[in-house]
Image (tube, rainbow, N blue to C red; front, side, top):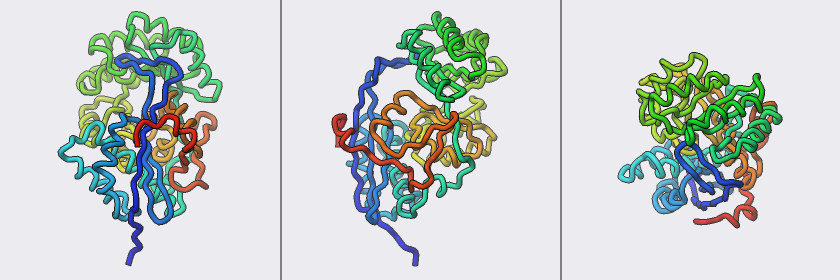
Amino acid sequence: MSVQVPVESVDVAAYEIPTDAHESDGTLQWDSVTCVVVQVSAGDHTGLGYTYAHQSAATLIADKLADVVIGRDALQTGDAWAAMVGAIRNLGRPGIASTAISAVDIALWDLKGRLLDAPVTALLGAFHDGVEVYGSGGFTSYPVERLCGQLAGWVEQGIPRVKMKVGRDTPADPERVAAARAAVGDDVELYVDANGAWTRKQALAMAWRLAEFGVRWLEEPVTSDDPEGLRLLRDRGPGLMDIAAGEYGYDLPTFRDMLAAGAVDCLQADVTRCGGVTGFQRVGALCDAHTIDLSAHCAPSVSAHVCAAQWHFRHIEYFHDHVRIERMLFDGRPELVDGCLVVDRSRPGIGLELKRADAEQYRVAG
């Protein structure tokens, strides 16, 4: 008879952390980021998971998902995941419900690793010892001096690729990109992210303009809701510029449809949005089937674990806000070495511990 370890409790709290400066991209502005943290306990162990979402995700977890998970075998993560997906059928899968499922699923995988005394990378079957990152921030709200200083700072840390935001003031973008290129030098890969701010024809014109500065990655030049527009950019844009999108994918059909449309050169997925570790693995399988690389959107401390187990993997977005917040909230983060995140395999599960006293001042729910 197999041993079962029933889940005993699910606890959740939301923490809202002010940004260190006003931030904006091509379509949004913000002054704080909310991290919803889940802790799932079974057999004298507690697993930790999290998502970046509105605090309403915490309410959904407490009111809808906790009872679905409690009592299930903590070692059967797939069973709990499927039950959560079924439980939110009438709430709608994309959006808050999927972020809530993601946070609980990550906590369940962390718990499983702790129960088995193994890191999640080992449970998944790692392909990579370390996973490459790119520095990400470069907000449109930054003065040019701060923009250039941030990008150059990542290069000084040994990260050979960096990304900045564009699209809020399109006429000014070429000048800002030129300044960024001068700051990081010619040997660093320069990426830009428009966050869906442009029309198709604006995007196509800007792609060719930005290619003059050696931009190698153009993310969401048009909205991800327009896969035909993304395909247009991929087909008619500069040959050495990859088109990327997918960070707002919440369920598998979204990723399937984007790949079927030939919309991207590199697909993105966010482990804290797409269904957690379980969902991210499924997206990775789609990428394998299409021989398309997968790039992880943000949440570097948990992304490092799941990305090590992805075959057609490219890199993780080492996002300024999330790097800062994860330093504030968690111990046991992966170490940055020569532009790669390296998981400490002596730590079971995801390896993170919540710094409760430090986090308490930011608690807004739970």
